[in-house]
Length: 444
Image (cartoon, rainbow, N blue to C red; front, side):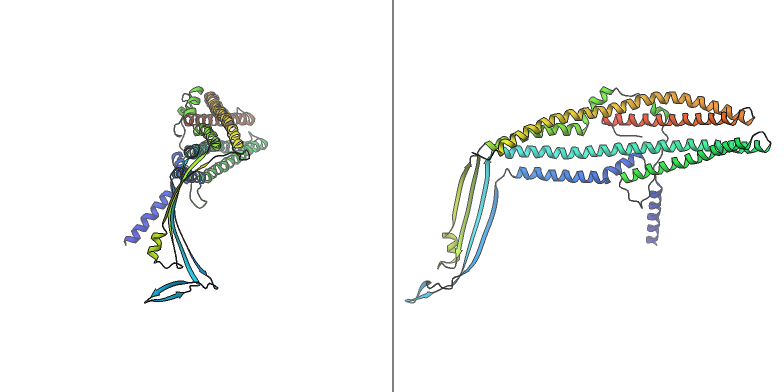
C-alpha cells in the first residue's frame, strides 16, 4: 500500500513539474548548471588548476627509486669460485649468474634565471583567465536567453492584439453579412471584410508559429532534450518598466570596465605577456642544478653473502651542475622577440575590447533612449487610433461610413498597437542589458 501511495505522489510531482512554466530566473539558473559550453569551460578551469599545481611542484626536488635485475649465461666460462672445506679446495663454475642493483636518486634545479618561478606566476594568470572565460561565456548565454525571453513576451502580447483584431474582423464580417441581406452593402464590399478576417487569421497563425520557434530556440539554448516538456511563463510587462530612468552612458561604461570579464581577461593577457618576456630572457642565463643518489648492488659471482654485498657495495654521491648557454641557434632571441610582439598585441587587444564594449553599451543605450521616446508617442497614437476606430465602427454599424474607411481605421489601430509593443519591449530589453553591463542581474 505504501508503494502505491509513493508512486501516486511521484506521479503527481512529475505532472506538476511538467505543467510548470519557466520564468526568466529559472531559465538563467538552469542554463548556468546545464549548458554544455559552460560545462566545457569549467572543465578547462580544472585543467588550468592542474597546470598551476604542477608548476608549483616543479620547484621542489625530484626523488626516484630504481632497481634492475639481470640473469646472464656464460657457456664457455672455465674459472669459478674456489672454496675450502675441511682442508679440501673445491672449485665451482657458475655459468649462469644473477646481478641486482638498487638506487635512490634526486635532482633539483636550484636556479634557472627564475624561469620556474615565473612559470608558476604565468600559470596562475592562466588559471584566472580560464575562470574569466567561464564568466564571459555565462554572460553571453544570459544575454541570449534574455533576448529570446523578451521576444517570447513581445510575441505573446502581439498575439493578444492580433486576436482582438481578428475578433473585430469577425464582428465586422457578421455585420456586413446582415447589411448584404437588407441590401445596404454590396457583395464586393463584404468580400473585402472577409479578406480582412482571413488576413487576421493568417497573421495570428504566423505570430503563434514565431512564438513556438522562439520557445524552441530557448529550449535548445538551455540544452533541454526534445522529450522534456517545456513552456515559458509570460508575465505582463508594465508600462512603468519601459518608462524607467535610463542611466547615463558614461556611468554604465565606467562600471562595465571594472566588472566585465572580457576587460579583465585582456588585462591579464598583458600581464602574462610581461611574464613571457621574463621567461624568454631566462634562456640567456645559466642553470644551476644539484644531484644526489645512493645505491648498491649484488651478484651471484661473488662469494660474499647477499647482506654483506649490500653493505660493501653501498655507494653515495652528490653533485652540482652548471649549464651556461653559449649558442642556441637563435632560439632564445627569437622567443624573446616574439614575446615582445605578443605584448604589443595584448595592448592592442585591451584597446579593442574597450572599444567593442563601448559600442555594445552605446547601442543598448541608444535603443533604450529612442524606443522609450517612441513608446511615449505610440501610447498617444494607440489611444487616438482606438478612439477613431471605435467611432468608425459605430458609424459603420449605422451605415454612415463605408468599408474602406473602416478598414483603414482598423489598419491604423493595429499598426499603432504593434509599434507600441515593439518599442516597449525593445526599451525594456535595452534597460535590462544596461543594468547587466553594470554588474546587476537580469530581472524581468
